[in-house]
Amino acid sequence: MANTTETHGEAAAAAEGAAQPADAGHATTATTEAGHGAEAHGAFPPFDLTTFPSQLLWLTIAFGLLYMLMSRVALPRVGKIIDDRNNRISGDLAEANRLKGESEAASAAYEQALAEARRNAAAIGQKARDEAKADADAERARAEAEVSAKVVQSEKAIAASKAKAMADVGGIAVDAAEGIVKSLVGGAVSKADIEKAVKAALTR
Amino acid sequence: MAAAEDRVDPIHQFHINDLFDLGTFGGMKFAFTNSALFMFVAVGLVFALLYFGSSSRSMVPGRLQSVAEELYSFIRNLVHQTLGEEGMAFFPFIFSLFAFVLFTNFLGLIPYFFTVTSQLVITGALAVFIILMVVVVGFAKNGVGFLSLFVPHGVPGALLPFISLIEIISFLARPVSLSLRLFGNMLAGHIVLKVFAGFIVGLAGLGIGGWIGAIGPLLMTVAITALEFLVAALQAFVFAVLTCVYLKDALHPHH
Image (tube, rainbow over all chains, first blue to last red; front, side, top):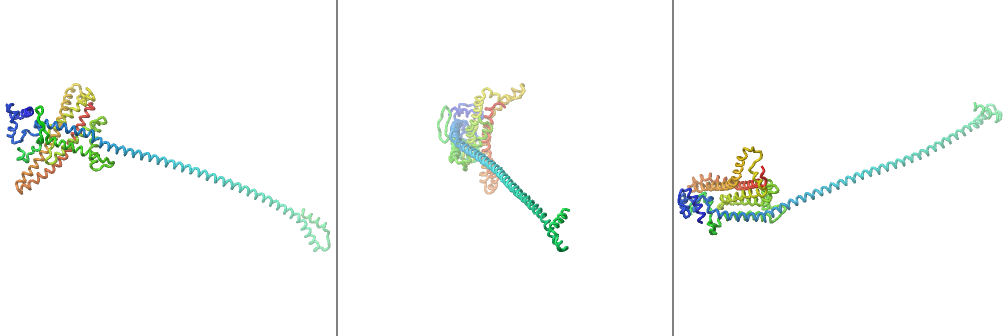
């Protein structure tokens, strides 16, 4: 008590200009400051040195306690929640990215399969077309061969008919000439003569 | 004793009252004071906010959890931006500092509550502790290299002693400005509030004319109360930011 009030008393004494340090420790502070019409402790409260030890003691305890509670208990708790959330979010994002990659791969595989199928379809179509064409060609060739064979045969038949007809023309002409001669001349002319005459006329 | 008759004395609110005495040790009087009480109230509130705010541990935070998380992230980002990854060791300290100043500031705005940060010894002790920590950390991390803080690069040799002297003075002025800024802001704000509030009481005692006259001070009191809320938060932030900046000097003394 004595020490602190003395230091405080010095401040007050300096202000007062009083030269009695012995009294300063006692009651001067209260009485002199009462002259200012002020307070129990005297000085402006924030500068009242007598309160400093208590305040420093409790500040140390209170702030030390706060620091302990914050660093040991409270901040790790809150920090863990935030970290957990961040991890969850980044985990979810990674998972989403993975799924996105998977779906892209699946989509690429589908595209590839589709392209392959298209290629196959085109090949099959081409093959079918080629086969059909070959069949058609063969069929046509066979038909053409048949037709031309028939043509040849027909031409042969025609030639034969023609030759036969030409051969018959002589007989007909003989008969016709015999008839004509019989009706015109009357009488009988030998068949051999007529044949000779017709043959001569035909060869001319 | 003078307090009872002096209801609108603007200084009365800063009085340290002993709630119970602890006795005298080494010539120093110790007591559990109203100041100590509100320190513990602030500590309890901070802890309760963070503890109960983190008790549900839900993925989508509720209101209390949002506040706790925002407070945490805010200071964490501040420390991370100014001090980097190696400075995260100071995160609990900066957080405690910010929360302590913020909550004692806000508590002081409640009528009849004591403002711990309006005591110079409190802000001074915090500031001195911070600067001592800066010095200790500075020498521990950089050895003698910490002194290069006082030797800026690219200064001509002739000017160097002069510049270094200025740097040393500015370094020594840091705890003073740090503590006085907070102390002064809280003290002045509360005095102004009390003075304007005192006008209302004084004028209202004069009858109907005084009532009308009291409207002006009433509006001012409301406005200053709003301003004080801003100041309370801002000063806590400034205190934390400056602590970070000073610690940055300790970690990286080369300008």
